[in-house]
Length: 219
Image (cartoon, rainbow, N blue to C red; front, side, top):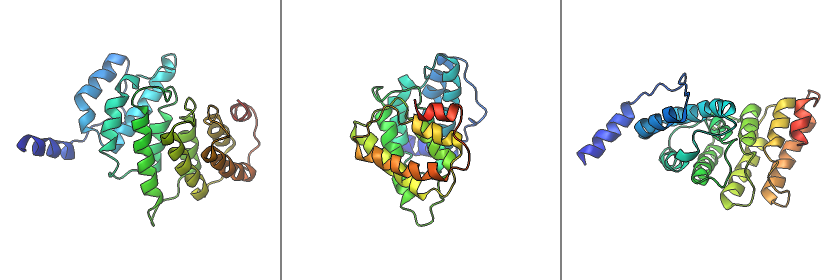
């Protein structure tokens, strides 16, 4: 009991400085996670995924977090009652862009994020999600299918996010959002719901869909 109380106290007082952290190798990621994961709060987890995205783009699009997803997913379950914002959520899911739904542990991460989003959407004082956050979130799902129950629940709440979003989407945000759906089936009702919500945003987009935005949207 004393050891558990001490651990909780340590977790509560821990202030890991992760925003400017950099990883140069898988070993450095392994060492950090093994030593510090249990101390990570919502901001730290968000930073961890954000940093891994930058590293994976330099590492043949291989995520350094893949082998740690089971541990990260389990830890994120303990954080679902913590205060999140939509930027935290989008950075976590954006960090999955080089991970597929076949990777062990990713479903736990997605399930935790679905729970968090669902709770946030039910708050009467909810801050409206931004278009950029939604675009990043969907882009992170680019290697995921819509077959699993967890993914369908996530897509359902993302559709609600889009509906509640008061932003006008920029052209690149439209392209990235649609690109993130490329492995999903239009036979899935939840995917069709997201597409319908995005269609409204596309019609209100004030920028011309040119270049990379069009390429991503039509991929």
